Image 1: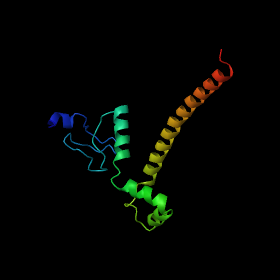
Image 2: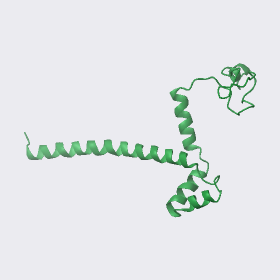
Image 3: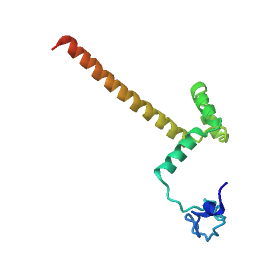
Image 4: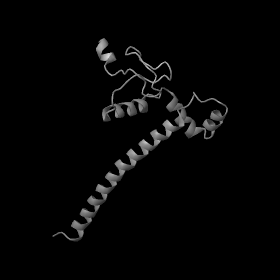
Length: 130
């Protein structure tokens, strides 16, 4: 269980977003709704947030992916009709696909590079055994 001190350790006395005065016990700003935290983000926090959002899509990510693959245009029609909560946010979906594309491209780029080196070394050994 977290202590009161650990819960209020990074809380400020004014909102960083709208500069509304806050009490240390306020978890969120009553004016704009931003989290009352003065903690600086580290790389660990950034990666935890990124991968947390990456894997916490509930069923919306699967629903978006299946609609994109099997019913092209359905997401656009539903979005125009106002049915937006059913699918993943388009910017989050784009970030996810870009991340997956870059990861796969990087991984298979490295694999194909070393495979080409291996094939080249095998060919050079066959043509010139010494």
